[in-house]
Length: 298
Image (tube, rainbow, N blue to C red):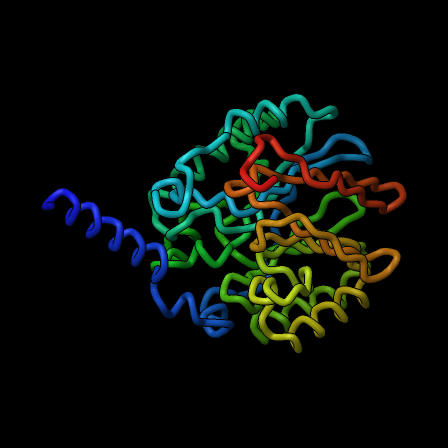
């Protein structure tokens, strides 16, 4: 009886830990982002070879989720992922991870993610001191006041930044609170309006998503903000919007040149995508979902 009571107590504690995370972070939709986002930071983009290159896009790695026994299989298939990437021809030039790199926002999980990043760098042939992995802030990453640890540990140590590779400029936004907020939007708008290059935008939350009734929670909650962002992107030569959070692969084409791609969850679906960019024609190709392990329900 005592053993059963102990197990039930542990299960309840795990459930509460998994569900609460800090209620402010769960129910906030935009106010905290103003405290995280300052100026748009320009960083040096990863090196690529030639005018056509590709990159891996991951989302929802959720380091630490395997410890929540009530909600996951406790299995990770990282070795299968690296085997799949190594077999890709040509080898991708870099990697973008679209948020929720941690499950609870704990420093331990971020350190585990950095070990994962080191393996990616090695697999992609990073030079000494080079970082080929660019990370986006997700809602799970700010749970339990995780932002302070995230900006200290995770490259490039900011949640709102851009970089250039050849013909394209890449913009990374902070949507971890379910909204980019008005101040970030104003800064993004000013930067994009003064930038004539074609663009790729990376965020955790989708701007449009699938628009299915039960999936609406997993997109930007403020529909006015979604309208403003889609209008801005269409007016400033944005070609691709990359997002995660929903754990499902889905594409939406808005115009002949602008598309949103939702990336399958790395942990829950064992999936990712590869994006190929042709600088000469400013053309982008999406591989579709690539699965490195068969998961239940696939």
